[in-house]
Length: 113
Ligand SMILES: [Zn+2]
Image (cartoon, rainbow, N blue to C red; front, side, top):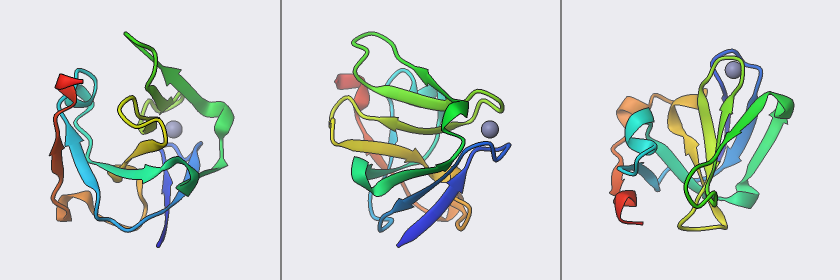
């Protein structure tokens, strides 16, 4: 299924193609702070529709993972994963067509990686 998503100020719009069966929360140092449920998808199933220039990139430690957020409203939209270079996590709360509170998230022990 195709789901459309956006940051809070709508400067960034994107779409993902996915079933909703890989919803995770992670306990690594950054995920635990932003506390978002994430849908895990392959890189090729993510497409920015609008506002690429509004994305800011945050990296730390190994600088492998790429954490993106809107430079205007500050909302985390997606990230490229350290543990899986071909995969990414997308902020479930950014998807326009669903309520993240209705979905249970599995736990990813990112603190160990
Ligand atoms: Zn924004």
